[in-house]
Length: 132
Image (cartoon, rainbow, N blue to C red):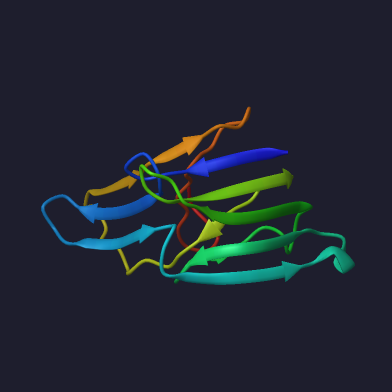
C-alpha cells in the first residue's frame, strides 16, 4: 500500500496558484473546509474512494481505473494534514480554476510530504482534449 502525506507548512497541503504580483486565484488547505465522500465502482470493475476532500475538489480516478483510496485528517503539532492511502493504479483529483489568460505567467505552489516508496506529483491539464 502506498501512503501519500501531502502537507503545507510542514503539516497540511496548501495548493495555491497565483499570478506574480496579482491575486491568488485558488488556494486550498486540504485539512479544512470539506466533507466525507464515498464512491464505489467495484461493480463496474474499477475502484473506490472514501474519505475527506476539501470543498471544490473532486476525486477523478476510481470510476475508470482499479484504484482504492482512503483519506483521513491527521492532527499534528506542526499543523494538521490530509493523509492519502492508495492501492492500485494511483489516484487523481481536480478543481476548477477561472479562465487563465494566454501568454501570462502563473505560479503554482504545492507543499507535500511523501513517505511512500513511490513518487508524488502534481500535473496540470487544461482543455479537452487535455494539454499537459
